[in-house]
Amino acid sequence: MKIAVVGASGRTGRLVVDLALAAGHTVTAVARDPARIPAFPHGTPLTARADVGRPGSLRGVLAGQDAVVAALGTAGRGATTVFSDGARELTAACASGDVGHLVAMSSAGLDTSRLPLVQRLVTTLVVDRLYREIHQDLARMEARLAQSDTPWTVVRVPVLKDGPASAHPRTSYDHPLPRAGAAARATVATWIVAHLGDAETFGRIVHVADA
Image 1 (cartoon, helix red, strand yellow):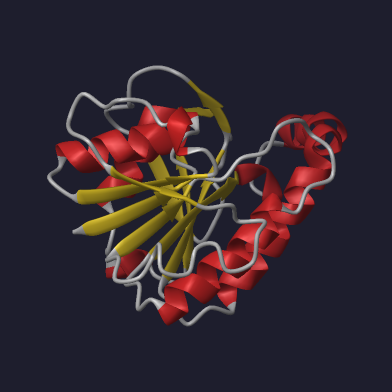
Image 2: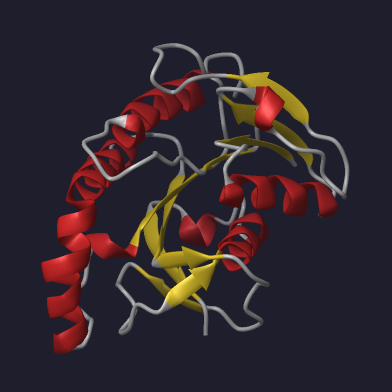
């Protein structure tokens, strides 16, 4: 498959690139500063410079890709539009470039309805206050994706950590997991690469966490 990873210089994006290369895919690593994209043990991706905050920067870059992975991030916890701007640019570029599948990372914190009461209260009183601005923009991103004609998948993840991939990750389609826990970035990247082009995930929100 031909795959583009937007946000390839971030920690999760780098893992997606490396795992996709290891699986034999042709990968384009997209970043605002391609110089920050490191060498990979499983091959060398193509690279492209693009800023999702600049209208039109992804047009052409994503043309003809079988799948596009958006592993966007932002520094700090203040107000941001990087995710909603990214969704606007991604959906426009995917539609004009005939992209087969768009996968975007989001946060499990957007829906805590199935958490145990104590954990839900902690999340509401502490986590949501800290990340409210980010969560609000992630919600705007998801709303934009839901209006796209390109087959899309949202992958909601809990607190991310470094470490090896979970051998038995927990997943839930369309509904949050009953406990949040955490997820290794490698777990998330492994799940994403394994499900690129998977029609069962199209138009759905998938929660992924470690066992």
